[in-house]
Image: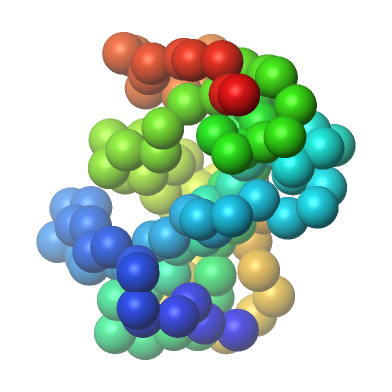
Length: 116
């Protein structure tokens, strides 16, 4: 599985380049607030393993009110570092590596707002 290049963003963590993306429109479950906001990351050149990061909030375009955040590069870089420390190997083929972040694991300065 690999990410669509169109709409994805590039980020460097250390000396390695990655590509990341957030789903622009929520899935049905995200829209109802049943599943959290997620984003996906993969190695920029070798798309062998995808990292799927779940955040402790709703999608910003959720149909219901809920607390959300904007996924910024600092958050993505922090999640990549955490995943690498937890055993994610982006250059080794395999199933998606799932990482669920808790609020205290988010970078300092993460802004919260109410999704409407």
